[in-house]
Image 1: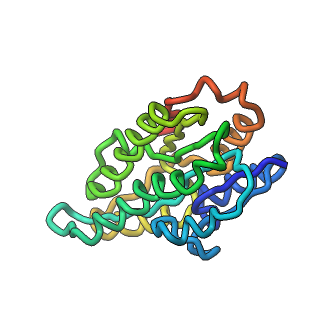
Image 2: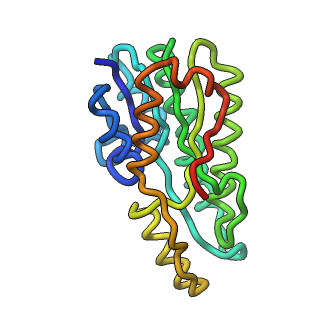
Length: 210
């Protein structure tokens, strides 16, 4: 059975993707819950050591931070950029030998292109991830690279925290239309069942929802 590594597969969208891929892949979860800090180069290299060929890497680990512009800090900037952007490079570099002929999927966000109040750090980190996806497709040879950019997800831990924070800061009710993470996961599972289904997505970012 082919192997898929999913970062952040212990919760949220990553967990849904892991569930949908398990029929066709041996799924390995790289997350804090499994002892792999995806921002730590040494730890990721250790986790990658000895692995056979890796057919799919899904970079899904992510964090959010909601704060007004005048309350942003360098520490928060570094943390979001580490998890939402640098970890993509970190994990990909560690797995390059095993990923030859494989596929990389970066989970981005509509926030990469859509300004949102009190979300500068998250949006900037996701914009970086979007450009990194295109740049990786340009530079990495013999690996298919594409991204999926979801809108507002339903029921994830990150979504619930953001909703609560926005209620405090702006008395803002969450948007009623949300995307079931399972819908995105099932689409991705279908695409990854065959190279023929996703090879022409190389360098692309799929926009899914608002």
